[in-house]
Length: 100
Image 1 (cartoon, rainbow, N blue to C red):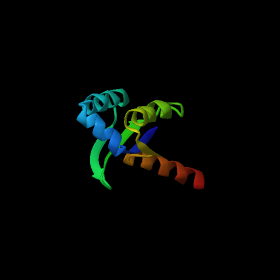
Image 2 (image 1 turned 90 degrees about the vertical axis):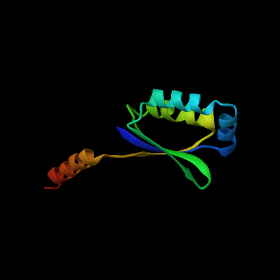
Image 3 (image 1 turned 135 degrees about the vertical axis):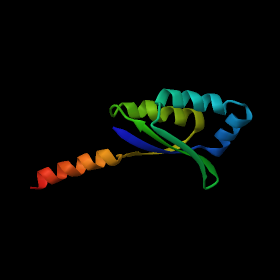
Image 4 (image 1 turned 60 degrees about the vertical axis):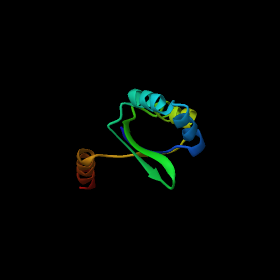
């Protein structure tokens, strides 16, 4: 199952990671573990943010996906189950079959 994570890093924690040189190492390790389908970084409301799209194998995987961001960056995370165009077509096809 695909999920979109909206990740907002705590500024003080992220500033320290940038200052002590650990930011890139931590970020690279998290991305290597998650193997995201897509990842984007941007500023939002004066904070470092990311949009990351990942595969969620099952409900228990949510812990492994979110904990690194919480532990390393004291991050705020919103997680949304999402679809690509093929998933949407499949879902709409299922609705059409069951509605008749």
